[in-house]
Image (cartoon, rainbow, N blue to C red; front, top):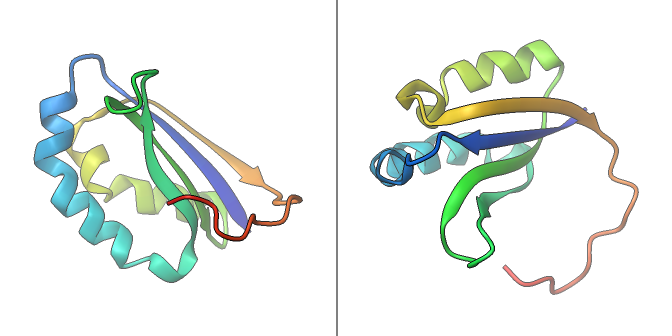
Length: 99
């Protein structure tokens, strides 16, 4: 089942995000085949990272919670707010969507 994982950073946590990012990316790479989409949420300037949005395939909400417990940004204390929702993708992917 797909789950949308919406994560908002604590205010002023930019340095923490930068420091933990290599470990975060490596952790995500271990689940690459389960990722429908993933990336940072950014402020209106299009550059400043303020959180993360992931849509990933997990067997259950409990599996998501277990995965998040070991996620490097979570372990670093980056997130102020975490929400997880089951997700139904009803819109076809747009071919050539910008990366």
